[in-house]
Length: 117
Length: 110
Image (tube, rainbow over all chains, first blue to last red; front, side, top):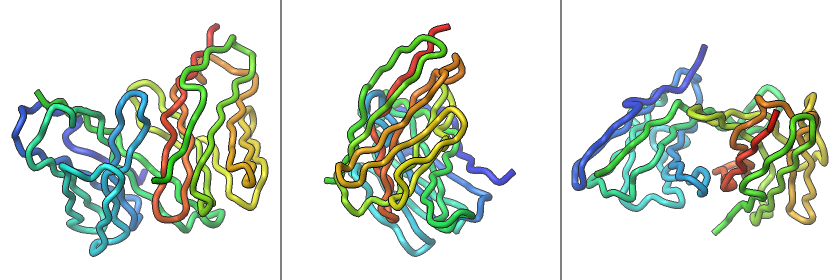
């Protein structure tokens, strides 16, 4: 089955370290996203990309950067991790042209649990 | 900025009862409204969606209603079962990005 995968699944790091989270997809979708999930705050958009040459900031991009290496790969970096970046991070993909017409359904990866000490 | 408000944050019902979760969105350009279910330790997954040209949609025990004028949409689950226990997220999309509500944790007591 076509899927979205993330590595690593869990990561513990220290304040000030550089961290990269990776996302790959075999769905063939052009659109990819990075979200952060915190208890009581839902899913907040960090960055999104509609194709390899297109990168856009979401609502909470400060302290993060991304790279779209290929249609199927989208990486999130924390240049200098801080404790309040401890969270569950989800990558997602979408395809506007669904079988029933317009849709922006998000297909999520399994998540990466990041702890910054 | 644009936002989606979701209520209640926690909902506890008896098995067999109905559950209703309500959301309000601010961006009048939103035209796609999905609902996601996230079971403990799992990724969010789409359970039902509705487009702005439709007022109501039903799929077995779940239904969604949309009031574009009031910018409200709701999820209705009938005959709840223990396996419905999860966190539910509403969302609104205008074709460029999706804004999520904060989530509702639903407990179904057997």
